[in-house]
Image 1 (cartoon, helix red, strand yellow):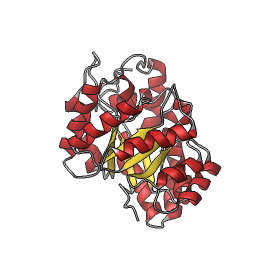
Image 2 (image 1 turned 90 degrees about the vertical axis):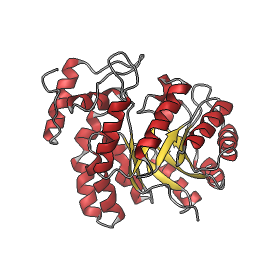
Image 3 (image 1 turned 45 degrees about the vertical axis):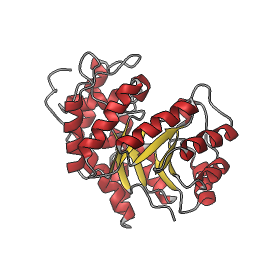
Image 4 (image 1 turned 60 degrees about the vertical axis):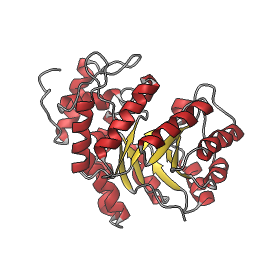
Length: 302
């Protein structure tokens, strides 16, 4: 049976930037150290939350390489190397493997999209050209294409395709995927607010936005479930719903970067076309954060 890349909570980390939009790797290092101190089980870099769409290829590899070196084997590092061009996805994936990534995250092709056959051929091509595990990433609200359960079944037979980050929100389809693919294909929630429902269907954890600001709680929620303490885990999931919702008041990662700036971890700078959260909405976010004990050094700036 294929071995799981991780169990529990993986932080889908932001890419910190200075006020001019330059990479801030010092802030990234501080964020990573804190996440690991707070028991995060894996790190996902250069994903949606990491603003991969506005990083050029050199920057992608710079960030991925930095995270791999800084984490230094303490937890698995999963590198986002997806593209809507198969040849480009292969290129990025091979480069990330050379840098020492433990696994890859492959989003479905976006904009040009693909048929289900196209998805099989695309992901198979990537899998055939690397020697490390791959997690697929299904997020149809962003890409306009949805991986169907029967397509997952075909892809699950590839030795390098180990599972998926599922953010489609269709629990019936997810249940069908779990039934078709069996225990050798790991499913991770791609939505914080659906972590426990997905784990109840056999999911191994979550690739989390919330874990950027509440890493210990996200880890604990998953660990409790995995240890069979379902009631305690469910209580945490329900208690965290308001902050989970607040992190999606605007397009991800705008709110989580605002939250990290309130906590004094990094600036809230994003690259266009994303823009920082507005002053009034940031005040509302800070109020929600305070209810969860999240405060920081930037409380006077909004």
